[in-house]
Image 1 (cartoon, rainbow, N blue to C red):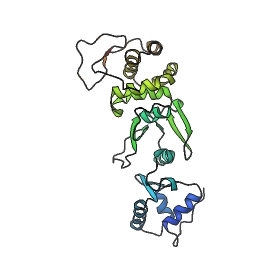
Image 2 (image 1 turned 30 degrees about the vertical axis):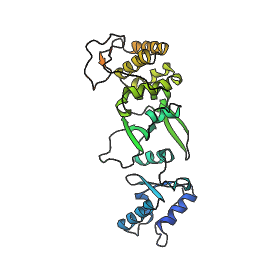
Image 3 (image 1 turned 90 degrees about the horizontal axis):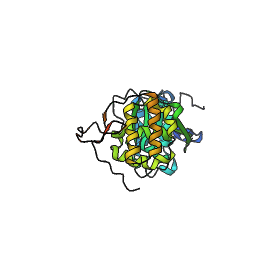
Length: 275
């Protein structure tokens, strides 16, 4: 990769950014700027950066990390995360995938499309909150690389969850997307693309409780009996016994809840939105 000499007394920060654009480089870190303009004070560089942010030449997208705003986005001054997410996650040194409602939208399940881009990565969570309101962060212990897909974006490629992992995540992280009613509506749009046999590969990355809830939703809310039977067989092969669980851990147990093979206490009402 082309880099400038560290001694750049006559070059403005904007000129340097223009040169980066010519070479197809669309992001940079503050540390990079400090290395390039080592003869200038940190205060001066921060002032220059803030001026370029205000003028919509660059966008602050994460602490110490910036994206150069291309011409097509300069009127709004906001670049969609798919434009820079790979570079940002490389900067953070973390694996990731686009997941939940954002991944579901990539499969055409856009009725409940998120207004932000939902990212799944590994912990620990940052101590300070990220000011980029276009990114919604979700955390796993481990990223299941074998369950990810990739596709071309405006700049490079992006990673996103398979249809099967997306379906599981929507239930596992239901509280992060607005609850089980919203999760069920998304599943109704996504379900035809889910190959239940592949959910076996998701087992090491989720919980039995999550799959019990998914199974119940498939059988009694979406009326996908064949898919529910297939998931039940997979789970019984892996774990012969299910503990009784609540559909929503945020609501009390329903005393008169009907018994079912998933051992789910259906303690909330779910009505799928019209698609």
